[in-house]
Amino acid sequence: MQQYETYMKKCFELALKGEGNTSPNPMVGCVVLDKNNNVISEGFHKKCGEDHAERDALLKTTPEKSEGGTLVVNLEPCSHYGKTPPCADLIIEYGIKKVVIGMRDVNPIVAGNGIKKLKNAGIEVVEGVLEEEARKLNEIFITNMTEHRTFVALKTAATLDGKIATSTGDSKWITSEAARLEVKNIRRRYDAILTSSSTVLADNPAMAHKNKIILDRTLKTDFKNSNIYKSGSIYVFYDETFTAPEISDIKFLPAPVKDGKLDIEFILKKIYYFGIMSVLCECGGILNGSLIDYTDKVYHFIAPKIISDNSAKSAFDGKNVKLIKDTLNYSIDEIKTFAPDILLTYYRQTML
Ligand SMILES: NC(=O)c1ccc[n+]([C@@H]2O[C@H](COP(=O)([O-])OP(=O)(O)OC[C@H]3O[C@@H](n4cnc5c(N)ncnc54)[C@H](OP(=O)(O)O)[C@@H]3O)[C@@H](O)[C@H]2O)c1
Image 1: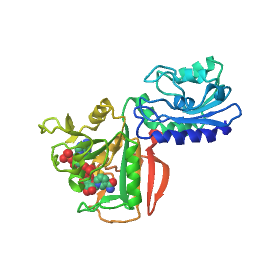
Image 2: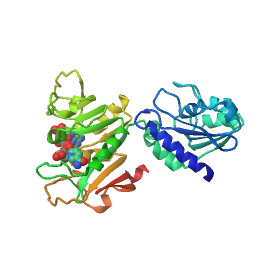
Image 3: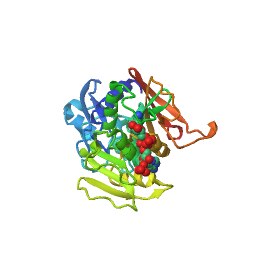
Image 4: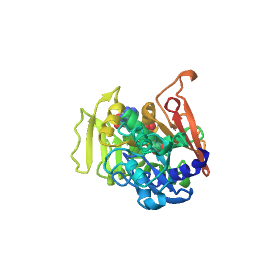
């Protein structure tokens, strides 16, 4: 097993080259070794509809070179005709003798069938190499396939005392330029970003992204002049009892209201139906407080600053937990430095 970990890590690296472009497909990388274990080819899945990683790698070599060799890939090769022919068939055609896999495909059309096809052709299959990392790499795809819902991530940038803006609403800038640059990288991983009417009004952010979702219950933002509406595909959710204006580049979507707030569950179902497989929420504490129940993963930047004011805005608001035993609990996954700030990445404990 251990001898394949280096190649599996290379597969992850290759797979990440497709980050942001493969949705709704997974990110996959592949390394092909000849019979003497020399790397003869590499490939990755670049974009939905284009070649899978195995095909990309195999087509760069020849069956003469790969005969008796090993193919390493982070996801089980497919066995079905989708937008491209089955990778398992090509692997057999190329005379590969061993296939090393990070994780089984959770797509019910594949799930184990790719492995079965390879084994039936006399190929040795080694499974579960760096499986945990393989699963984390494709956490969005796994959530989509197994739970049929959008993967929800949330980003917040706070001071040491957990504040995201002063009492006057000033929030520019809590974190450093390095941290803000990383936010742009994080955004690219997700199919859409989501924010609130309050944040649009307070900050007038542009939030460059191909898909933007704005929760504006009473339609109070300036749809003509706010920066957020100037680019990308725009989805505005509003109270279904209101009447939306007619603006050609904006999709106005009525939603039910529960306890005076737009129904988050309804909105998340709706965006999944539109093909938005993952969303990064970038809002203030009030909306974060509503979203946190649906959030899979949090990117929490912390700047070494203190505001020290009870009326300053908090990163998460409105849950009003009274007893420590009732707190929402998380597992820290990663701590990174974007000097002088840090980024904590964490998951809800039940979601690991
Ligand atoms: N540091 C950061 O990471 C960061 C990120 C974003 C914003 N901010 C700062 O946060 C401040 C705004 O924070 P905030 O807490 O006042 O506002 P917020 O959380 O951004 O937005 C709250 C508003 O969203 C709307 N909303 C729609 N559906 C909702 C739902 N289901 N639950 C809750 N709210 C819903 C409501 O307004 P309607 O009902 O009127 O639509 C609500 O008042 C700004 O000063 C901004 O600078 C900081």
